[in-house]
Length: 158
Image 1 (cartoon, rainbow, N blue to C red):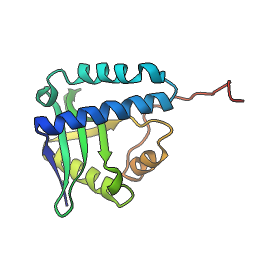
Image 2: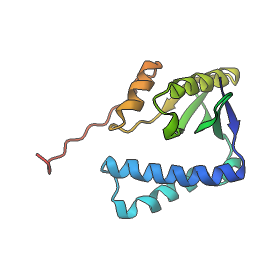
Image 3: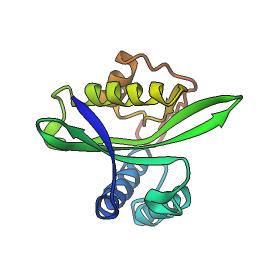
Image 4: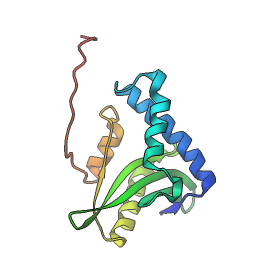
């Protein structure tokens, strides 16, 4: 079983560094940012979303804690009120590399959904980069459906 445990300040510092690095790398892979600017831009955007760190209103930063294995990853999400309903948005869900491919991602999403139901949340949104086929397959298997799709054609490498 997996539980979502709120991060402390020390855990948040590690999470922030890892999240900025990952977000920068993903945007470079996607062709949205240049490598030289990626860390600065990722740091700026993350700081804008989390101006008070773990104390930012409506944002939840949690360690994914497996009852036998211990910490296996992290999740960062926000709960918003829209059209009279609570909606969650996942900014980041990361399973540590050593635990990937073992079903922990699916178990973590189930634990997350269970927690949201208890909070009377009606839906979950998220963004997945187009090149992240593994994550996309997991999300669709778990019942997530596309709500918009951006397409791109690279003319330089024809």
